[in-house]
Image (cartoon, rainbow over all chains, first blue to last red; front, side, top):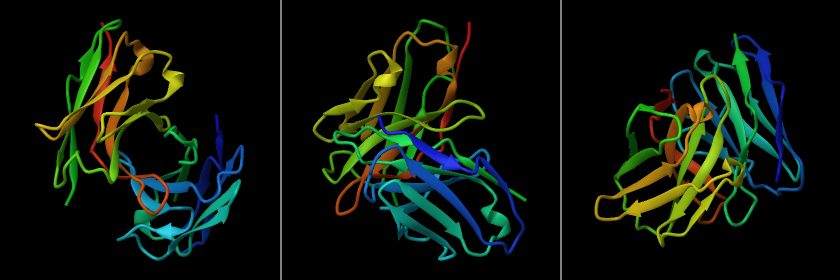
Length: 108
Length: 122
């Protein structure tokens, strides 16, 4: 099974800061990596797919990089609505068998 | 606009079967461009993929659940379902359904239903 490890588990930042969250895969997964944002009491929302592609409607301050085993989600200038929990998810295995990272809570 | 809505009992007794339905509006579950998936989240914890179903009826599930997960389509109602037998307190979670897109780019879940909290307790 592929293991996904996010760091840090939690992060304190301020409005306007640039922040980066890292996700590491236990094996090479190419660009088969997605990022989701989850706000309290809400369902996750897709931000980035295929490691670097911005989902329609997601602000351009969000960006994704990486390939293989190490991936980053960067928010260039934090806005108040960005404080949430972020999850990475691999979709490398065929047939489908998905693993999520444990999450990164971004706090003010 | 595609929308998904979970429904089912919010309370299930231990050893009984958890049964949920995901109602889809705005697109057909018979569309071969998608899978349809179930994901769960224990209170205060992370996300766990449960399984997927394809328009053909083919299903895939997380073997770590260690028992038979049943996911099925009801094309007449444009719904898909989840059955999880022999539940324990560890199955208490928010259960989400979601569309799994895979054409052109790798699989990703979008959109998600709002989720339904299922508690396992006597």
